[in-house]
Image (cartoon, rainbow, N blue to C red):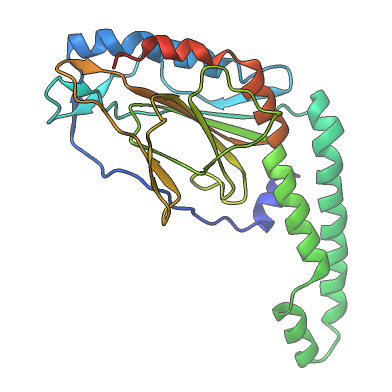
Length: 265
């Protein structure tokens, strides 16, 4: 069922503000000392995204090298290169799968069969009628796309974590149902994150994001880093995209405030 939907849907790439790639080197022992503990805590927080309904598709490597730009001189915010990426999808035959996703997948199959019947029926028509069928919007295919997009979103949660991120996207949320403990700012992006163009994303920002500078053209907020004489962690950003109900549950359930104790500005 999932492969059927994937074959039908068209993905588009959404580009967000980003920094250019840099040549990297292994972090120094002093930098590793600062980074190792928050990295382990971030990974432990992301571990909480899985449960009986949600299975982990891929994970960051617990033993990977901590890399920083080669021109980093050991002072100021450590521009940690890596992000911590996790993908969680609904376990097949789980409670969530059977109650939420299976009815949607079944409906897509039903509509796809209907579309195939419509397609076969038009083959006996004139060339003009066949051309019109293929070129005009088809209600059955439109329904397949709409339901398929919804199913894909409800089936997945993607989460990313960044240390000393220079910007976040979206607009500050105004939702009484969302309470992210310890975050100084939470923004919502309605255009998805990376390839997830049709999904909603949240940026959970920890650090001093009060005096942020907004770029309205690109819908970005830039962080004002402090110049410090030693290596420092001045912010941590968690980005979540995917199933709206699961995102709200995780934002409210997890005690994110533990991240603040690793900020060293």
